[in-house]
Length: 251
Image (cartoon, rainbow, N blue to C red; front, side, top):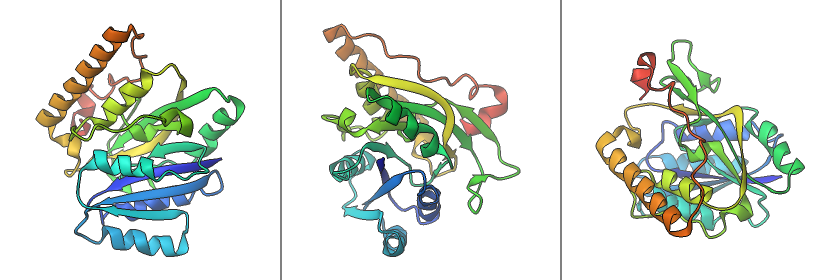
């Protein structure tokens, strides 16, 4: 099955090649279409991606003036391959775990009604970029977190869904909530699909702003569900392990 992977990026010259390489090494498991949306980078990010695309035609670089991650993701949605069966996202500083597509694609092949799988992620504060694994000294925490990168969507299930470009954070949470409000079949799976790199440059480290937009997304979802008598959102997220004392540094 053909999988379009949307990678929004801004000034990630240190990480973007590793993120893309973590996908390329899984070429035998999926027919990959890698859409890198450069959101006005001023470092070497776009040059690195363009260089990789010379030898890997499955990589497409789309450039735009800096407009934020929500706009970049919408640009990615606008450029999904016409023959794509599935769609997912990858953050430009993270790693797609080997075997993710081999584990999840067969679920879609065997169930034509399945609209989305949602897998686990591992938060990690130090990654060995040559092995695409946590380093020997890394602190890690594995959970079902809020991350688009752990969701694999059937393409038609995203029809009509866009990112709210007024949200500078939690746009992914808002997007997921609106997906879960649809009457579609989805499945929680236990494999780890993403290594989520925790570092000083994470946008989610801006806790006050993140909390404000997170609450906004929850309130908007509650209002929509109240108006149309939708069912409650399923329990797809479990942060209990993250809030154990031993994982404080990863929060």
